[in-house]
Image (tube, rainbow, N blue to C red):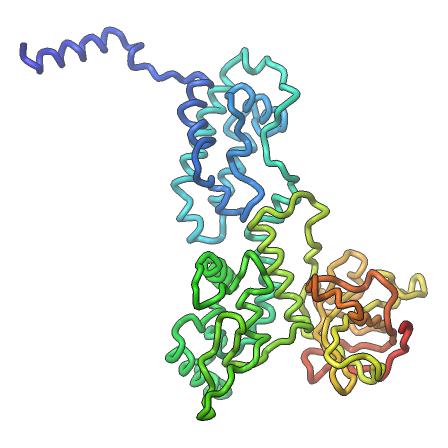
Length: 452
């Protein structure tokens, strides 16, 4: 029999029985064909576009269609009156407004597939009168295992904001070798820095250009580098041990040793690390503390170490260009010991010093018994009277400075620790102008030692 004849018969039969071609649009069928594959997939969902960790679309899916729907509806994630406006669809679609164009483009296909799958399934569920009439089960509940605060903390935009405040704000420590975007060919003062940068790039390659044109691009590059494991180089971000990140090891390292002929050896990017630029920050200063804050927080976020809101760091430091210099520290304070200075404002309404510090810095005691440090504002609603209209600069005012010496070496175990949870070691007062830069630093002579 002619095969074309058979095909014509088959097609005719289908035309007579259209139910053979009808798609099963029941909630269970849509769930099995479109939602279950997301649940079973070993690949992360599009949530990774906006979050480092803490949440995955799989968290919102239970083994059965009924349990998933009832649980999500009970949590307000599904709008039965207007299915297309369901909250879970809004969460999936948030990636469409990601300011990171590259990330938005990379995840577009996956995000679209997830959105369409959930939209079709929710529509099917909301068309099932019997399902709508059912009471929600007492357990289990679909959703992430952590709180919304932890989920928000893992958002990349929150991590970027922290990066800008803690790392990007201190990038000029690395000028000009690692900051090509800061070099201006029209600036005569940059002639030699440009030549120096050009020589280093020629010798060591494009890896010199750590800080890119924008903080977003810089952070993306650092994160990408952290995923590369090399035998001859530690990662810029060491997830397993943040303090072993090249990002802080290099600027705190000395020049490489000299050869027998007096030439400097090649700098090392493994322990012991050496830096052709020499020491650019000390492990006790405010820049090191800020960089370690971001590195430790990033590492814990990416590895899902935050299980509850009380484990999250406050991360409320905002950099300023105000510098405090205190001279005449006690002679028995060891040179190069770490010390933290907290700034408390005078409250004319209550006629007393504020208990909550408005700013702080961290530095080391110099051999001349001096301490210098750039201030970080500690964001707090009750400190607004001390802040400028921009919200980060301090207004001139009468201040009390409390000094905390790291006598017990607590910062060795926790570089981001604040020491003001005890009685201060010394105290002083001043009329602070809060100028810009070291040339306009507030210089205070002497302190009153309180503890031994």
